[in-house]
Length: 464
Image 1 (cartoon, rainbow, N blue to C red):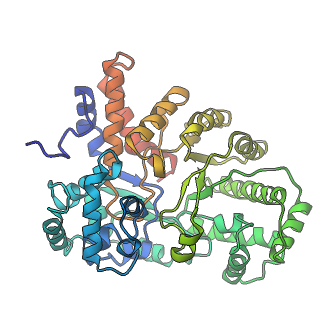
Image 2: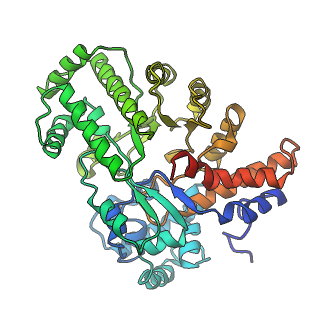
Image 3: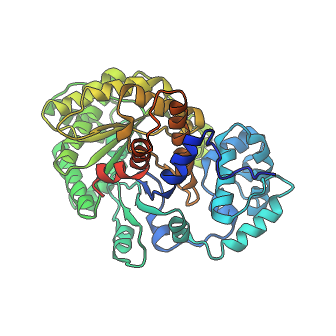
């Protein structure tokens, strides 16, 4: 019987098979947005067992365990790790139709050579076999097995970047690991931890951030610090896109109110966020950075579980706020003064794909191919349907051939088969278009296109 994850998985025509096996498959990986811990990479983390490597922090899996009736003590609670894994094994047969069913078996096969379908009946044997192999498969080994060329982590502006320094000095590890600047806590002025974070930033730079000009000075210093450490990307979680014209005087008053714990109006919040995003974009442009806007998450919906477990534990959803006007105003404010940096737009609501793609084309230019990018299908959308829609939407209204391709957006060292998953799907979509007569059966043209999207476009775009 043919194994489930076989050589031609997702490749449903001869063109797709040729494009994948002769072109996409051989390309290294650039994972330009992820949430891996640089300390764990430097220390070459050794995993206790398959639970530790696979389930200990994966809220994708946690969500579906809850959906299948698994109680929280077997998810984030204090049950034994083997028992938690066995609960996951009970869930896996119910995942048919969900990409996690594919990812689960891709990861078992690519890293551990296991073709057996995971189920309650096979779980104990799989657990023992993987645990034995994990004795020699450390974090770095998993990265090397995946042929990862560059990793960009996600880092707070107050981070010391000490682990990036150590990785940079380590000549034995060939993958480049770079920081990415994530200043969400400076932007989200309405959240309760804003003032506490500003105090921490002040301690890092060595002076009190008593006014908006000193905050801007401190942020600029941290951007320059990150730049010296090799950072060339920023990332912003724009759950709601905010922009409204304002003045320096207004922002000074809004910042002062916030630092005194006074309530801000929705309009004041919009003005502050837009002002700071424009300031940050200007600083990025000076240094030829790429800024990433992750748009449209609705986070921490369960107040009860936020209180019990904290954020990023699987209680998020897709937002449905309108983005076209504020996003275009924000980008126009930067473009008007020639300060719009390279930008990647990710939209979590598939309704907004064409909105973002057509909007970004209004701000291309400057002699930079693909200056404004429409990012890969993200979070709830990195499914076959979500990725197919993203690829076809970009092809319809943009330049698919300039696309910078896939990323993991993951905290797991086992997530790299998602790049293969994406590449197989990309090749199949192109192959289908050839079979329909919409694309030419030109393997020089299409092979280069696949290789570019898989690797070279990102390498050139980020100047790696």
